[in-house]
Amino acid sequence: DNNSNSSITADVQALDADHHMHPFTNTGALNKKGARVITHADGVYLWDSEGNKILDGMAGLWCVNMGYGRTELIEAANEQMKQLPYYNTFFQTTHAPVAQLAKEIASVTPGDLNHIFFANSGSEAIDTIMRMVRQYWSIQGKPYRNIIIARENAYHGSTIGGTSLGGMGGMHNQGGPLVPNISRIRQPYWYGEAGDMSEEEFGILCAKALEEKILEVGPDNVAAFVGEPIQGAGGVIVPPANYWTEIQKICTKYDVLLAADEVICGFGRTGSWFGCETLGFTPDIMSMAKGLSSGYLPIAAVAVGDRISNAFIGHDDDFNHGFTYSGHPVAAAVAIANIQLMKKDNIIDYVAKDIGPYFQQKLREAVGEHPLVGHIEGVGLVAGIALVKDKATKAPFSDDIDVGMICRDHCFANGLIMRAVGSRMVLSPPLVISHAEVDELCDKVQRCFDLTL
Ligand code: PLP
Image (cartoon, rainbow, N blue to C red; front, side, top):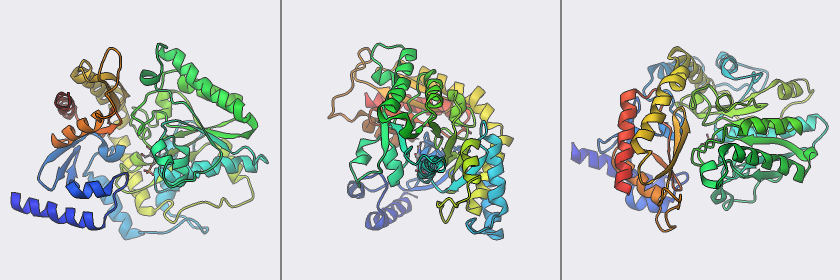
């Protein structure tokens, strides 16, 4: 009943306010109004302690790809907990879950990305890539090749390595100094930054920025270029179709390693196992996390192609890197069950050929002509919507109107989780979402845009 709901809410909020420091949050401000208490979840829905049912348009944080309440994943964790809850693979040991998961991942990665290093979060996977590509060049006798090039408005996590590599000014301003020998180029944000250029011209221009940067710092000093196939936390920015193929050519020309951060795009989000397949390139190394276990337990991985793996495996030295929970058996068992479930449910085809196109079309039908909407971009089950004051001129709202937050709060109050990134609204629902649930999602988006107007 309402009274006991209210007391659960108040009790949890009081504990939270007394002791919990929230990530990426002004905790003091949040404590004054109280955090919403999420109690349980099923399929694509969450419930809060007041009994409200909420459609999770973000799959948690872009991670609960196979939806909530999957007994296959729950049972895999339970069984592995009983069998072997923990052991490491540091000291000449291994175990079945980690070995089998490495094989499962290799079975879905493109190209020769067949050697797998484990971590627990996307940030740790990114730190692993940063250390690996630099160490790769050291093994080649070229330790001076240590500059890593990334992009403005990229998100690569919030460890000191991930923060430094990413292009988020608000993060750079806190907790510095940053990791040295990182360079950045512009993002390929066509709607926001291309002026009158066609997508094709702009794709070339943005890729050329990589070549210019390589020449500026000296090709012999560059270890790798790192990018998200589609920028996620930056607002779901889908690059022009020619962008990544040009980037790949430039990396090949200057012998620069190409790293894909697949933490969001991996595991079906774009309608392929990995975003690089949808965007048309093949990296030398890539990070993955989130969808690897559908978020049920923390686990991440780096898939390493032959060029880099041969150097490490053929080199007579330890790689002095790893985490206590690298390849944690319970997380690995859940990830195995998750990949097998994805295969059994044919989820990649469902996103590529059925629900992904349906979602993209429905979203455009629902709000494409809405006066708030400047542009919609997306592929598969991820989308970004630019909110503007003036559709024709693309003029943004004035600085004192945080239109994204206003819209997000309307969603929040109306049973929909949709995230705001500045004035861009982003969606990334569970891949198992049904047609009827997509209809409901798009109706809610439209209603919340109406309320925001
Ligand atoms: N890389 C990308 C592309 C991400 O989107 C994220 C998280 O959203 C990360 C890295 C960091 O992952 P984690 O939060 O698991 O450390």
